[in-house]
Length: 629
Image 1: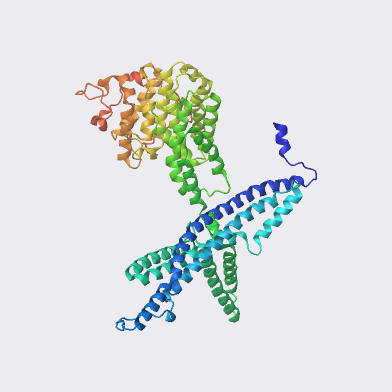
Image 2 (image 1 turned 60 degrees about the vertical axis):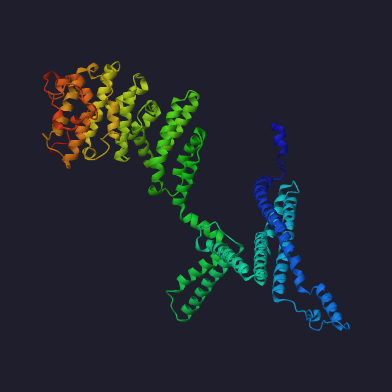
């Protein structure tokens, strides 16, 4: 098989054969597409002209009789004249029929037959030229692909290509064919209206209005690409109108240019000369070039539509994988105008949700091999990392869909988020989302292998000795993780002043709901003590017992949201009676109104819970943001 494939390739003898062969391969593809367009246009014209010519001929056959007198009228005239001359006949009172010798052709018949005859001739001419166009296309391919010699073949093709663009270009021939066919249709309609008016004015008027409406629509279609550059409508009249309109403007500028030279206004001459060149180029390049220039000027908006359209047509995981593989190259391209506003809808809503869903399906699938899963993970991570907004919104989407999601068990995904949580060059919100993602992931893991141990140590800032002590204590790691997450919320006072994300179904709420899944009683005592100290700080803020930052009411409400979430960790350490007022004996539900009251969160006064607190590393020791600076 390889030998047969090599045999199909042209044998290179001369040193220039390689470049000529490359030219021939590309020219062959272009020529085949070009001739296919010619043939397709010709077939459409032939089909229409065949039906149209038959209809016109049928009308013309019946109308031609109106151009001459009827032979039966001549016979009737002769018989009536003989009858009058017959002796004894009483025919003198009978009027004679019109004399055939005095017959005059009706004007409507002249106009009708003239218009219909011209229409039929034009239609048949179009059919003939369409047939010739098909022959020209076959001849062009036969001549340009006849020889196997690369140099000769390239020269012949280039000669024929240049010839097709000179004198009467084939592109203009197609325009001429279409224009002739349209003219034939309008001539027939004009004759048809005249024909109907002769027999019945009402019928003629109704048809005339219909024809006028069609002509108006045709004219609007002709002017549409001139008024609206992005209009797909076009007729052969459009090019003519374009040239005339641009020519009128160019002529006006030429007169202004002459006047500026004669009045010696040198400051206006360069600007007018530049406008003259601009409109001359617009005349020579045509409407198509205007469309190309407009598309280039709106590249950012159009690129967004292209990507959104491609994304909306994705069908299945295979298409999604191919799409994500191309996302980094798209965002890193120098040709793409990456406007944040135009790409905001795609990157903030549609794409992040699809990426998380695609990752989840891939990681939980039993049909994919490990290599396929790894390839999909790498494509997703590269796509996420290629755009800052996409990175932020993907992290947020992951936190909003924490329930039973497999992405938090993906080491590569968590590694990316961990790196972003320590990256000071990214948006602060990205770092906060990344910390929450890592916190949720740590709480999902129970088997601490070397990779996960490294992630936990770096995220929580634990020394190796303490990590080794907690490695066999899952709840100790999780409680340490929860304390670290809450401290991060305390560190950023601006987040506590925001509304929404701390409430139900919010990002921070979901993160804390995942991080609180632990048994605090099984954790190390020093972590329990640290948690109680943190609880007391939050409780005092909620009750207004400590100085507060700006917007204290929102901060206090969000602090109560935090307390309401982590109360399930506090209660096992203190008992229900240590959390609730005396009149309550059951744990409150998440929707209990009691949780919206600051007095419902007591301060821990147990002296055994405030000893041996964890000595956090310097980069995680966080002073309360609710105290005065």
